[in-house]
Image (tube, rainbow, N blue to C red):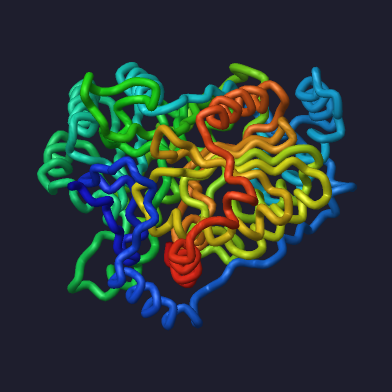
Length: 486
């Protein structure tokens, strides 16, 4: 009889564990050894960095005046107002979008950029199809940053395509995380290097190197692919074949493996330059070979009407930008907060923001996993259910797939897709990247997908939750002690 995989808490930084074959039962069983490890880890937590309990802005939201950028820089006040008016078309409550735009303007120096086209890519087959097609048509540069790249069918397909593009004279830069991709043989990367692909390993794992050990907990969790400086892909999907089939279909007639449910986004337009800057900055932080920046920033023109913001966080920031932006958007919500989260172990400030929103009449709905590759994290996340349910937050668990998506849509006008999980690891330990899209049209696409996920999820009712076993309650309380490490 197959037993569910029992993850070691020290492996919490790993996701999509490639050797895992998941059984059909929910992941709630935890070994005594794992519990002991968590307790030991908790003894080390007292000196660890924390997250800010509140997010402050320099400008009051009511007076913040959003300026929208175009391909050639900031637009005039009148042009910005025209963009905002266009985005609000079809909205019954036009003030919702303006409020979120004001919050975005007050939070950070990352610009709101118009003239973009954003396309949702649901699940691996759709995302890989678009990504490989874009790379196949690359003429100048391909930049890839990923947490996991496996030497499996999908990884081999990518390597073959990159080798072909190098032979055609396309410049290829690849950065991967030293922990997330530690199972990938060195020969995979050596073959790429031999063909002229520039390869950088983020924070390599070396037991004999003190700096390596000091950086062990800080990982590059970003998923970012930029082709010719004109098209960018980001989201939750790594370069691995676990995403090769959608939840709606099987790989083979008798295949009983769980399928993965994830979301990526493809963006074209002026904002691609901002994502390119994020890649180059990260590349330079790892002492990657010098890049001639003029090759990576072609003239960009409007290709759509969507306002997008490139948003990145680093583990060494005092206030991670993605965390601050999410918290502020939740605090500004007036009607609805719809969250789809693969790993949900947030801090108290995040929980307080969700419960406060529910108590002021905002409809807060979470879709979380019933099945996962990291059972320890799922159990820890469930320790927050009682507080959330008591406040009126609606909780659902996706039943037919391993939920790996990381998306939020608020008031139907503020949306984000990216690599960031709602846990301490993403907020404090990892480097992450997200796209924020503002507007009713894209928000409606996000809402449609949210409802489709909701239809395949089971609601956790307060009545049923109160009837869970004493053992489940014990597991939740103990695993929550190690939340900072997850």
